[in-house]
Image (cartoon, rainbow, N blue to C red; front, side):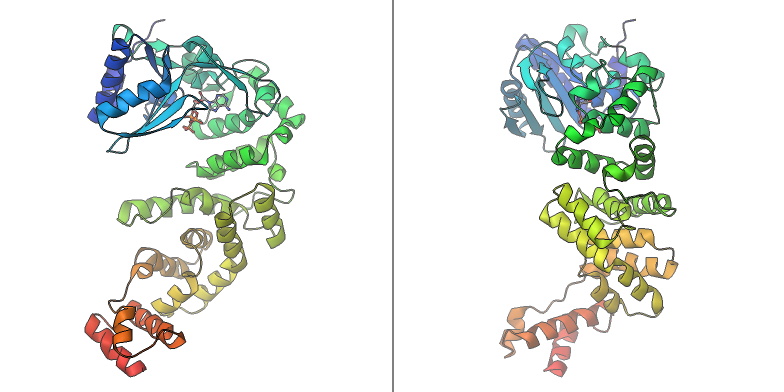
Length: 430
Ligand code: ATP
């Protein structure tokens, strides 16, 4: 059956994205090359959940050359990755367009990245992980929005099935084991019968052991970035067992609630506050903190070492693990804790730690205190500067820092409001 998605494209995307699609279409026609939308973006479009990014693959021209033309026309910036013959364009309104060239992959050794050769769309789709990720949409004017589905991805989408492209797929690239589980958990899809057999076989044969820890860490990050993290962890435990992360890692009775609280708090933070200081990694870092919370300090540290996490992540997580229980206890003990005291307790930890602690605790009074810190108190600044203090004859040193901290705490507690109050307080302190 031939399927055309012209109307779906028009309805699914906002005007700016449709304009980009039209531009790609006309440049492809002019250059006499075939252009396609491919992969996850097509899957999500067909599931009525269009993504904001575009994934384009070309037949007959280098992705880098084509990207240059598109980026120029859009007045957008672009980055190229010559070793993969791909480019990424970022438009002024933050649309990300990945442009690649059709390729085929030769797997020489399991778990190792394959050798790559240029090819056509049929071969390019064949090298992909699952049929639902191997659908393309033609963008040239004559065949505009025609679905290109050589491998039955469309019916599999309709039947909610994850199906590998060929029997050797999990051996070629065992990270697909983790991808299969992630998509099944995210979309609530089943594995097709043969895929399930081969998935279980690959797991039993410990194929993941041939994958570098760096690649596993990247997959782990993606799993922990998913919106329904508990569904992911449960599915992972059901198929692989969490001991592939650490032998003592288990699903705890509170994990489900903590993950969903974390999701809600992060969403609320993004929706309600116009503060933009939360890193794009925040979700997975908070979920990671929740995941490892019941492990001992040394067990958690061995995960950080094993999977080669960056020093910045290590510092955040180690500090969280060391102090979170104590912090929760302190915040829960005294109901009438001053806001500055809460600041003093939470500020030495990273922001993700505050989100993890607020998601783990059941105590409303602790939650309220942490939330005030997150959205309000941690952002308070004093007006007086170091130069003002120097002008008042105070030399930099411990006294200097003491005064600045006292001023900040007084402002957080609303004991002082403006610069005049601050100057008065300084006089009292010296
Ligand atoms: P997400 O919604 O999580 O971003 P995605 O399907 O877009 O999912 P990406 O990792 O961005 O996933 O990959 C884009 C496409 O590249 C996939 O849809 C799939 O066609 C292909 N792909 C990615 N990883 C693999 C892999 N390990 N093996 C084969 N094909 C892959």
